[in-house]
Length: 271
Image (cartoon, rainbow, N blue to C red):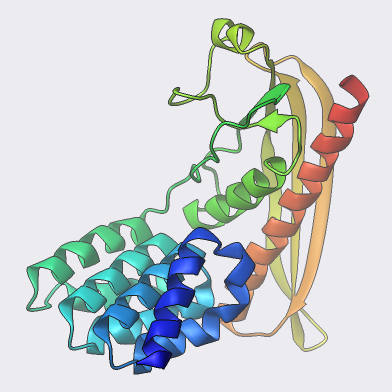
C-alpha cells in the first residue's frame, strides 16, 4: 500500500510539473507494467502521455495489448496518440479488435493522430506583460508531417521562453488581426521560412544527419521582412532506421532552438 500510495502521489505531482520530473520515466514505466493497482497503472499511463517522451512508447504498447484492465488499455492508447510515434501504429491497429468499446474508440483516435500528426503544435497560453505577438509559419512541405511537427514544437518551446513574447492572445482562437494587436498594445512579428535540407549519409561507419533552415523575421500582419536567418546542424548516429529517425528529429530540434536564439537577438535590437 505504501508503494502504491507513493506512486499515486508521484503521478499527481507529475500532472502539474511534468518537466521537473521528466527523469522519472523509468519509474513510471515500471509502475505501468508492474504495479498491482490498476489506479496506479492508469495514472502512470496518463502521465507518460503528458510527458510525451518516446522512451515510453514500448511500455505503453505493452500495456495497451496486455493489461487486463480496460481503463489502463484505453489510457495507454490515448497516451500513444499524444506522443505520436509512428512506431506505435501496428499496436494501435491491433487494439482496434479489443473486446472493450472504450479501448477500441481510444485506439482509433490515437491511430488517427499517429497517422496524421498535428502540424501546429498546441500554443502556450497568452503571456501577460508581453510586448510582441509572434506568429509562426513553416507550414507543410517535403519533410512530412512528423518532422515538421517536431521542428515546430521545438520552435514554439524556445520562443515561449523569450520574456516579451507571446504566441497567443487571450480569448482568441488563431492569429489576431492588426486591430486586435493594437487593442492589446502588441507589436506583431512573423517567423517563417523553410527547412532547406534534412539528409542522412554514411560517414566512417556511422550515419551523419545534416539539417539546414533558412528563415526570416517579418512584421505581422504586414509581412515586411526585417531580418534573415540561416542555421545548420549535424549529428552523428548509428546506422539503424530508428536511430536515423530520432536523430533527424533531434537535428531539427537543435536548429529550431538556434532560430529562436536569432529571434531573441533581433528583439533586443528593437525593444
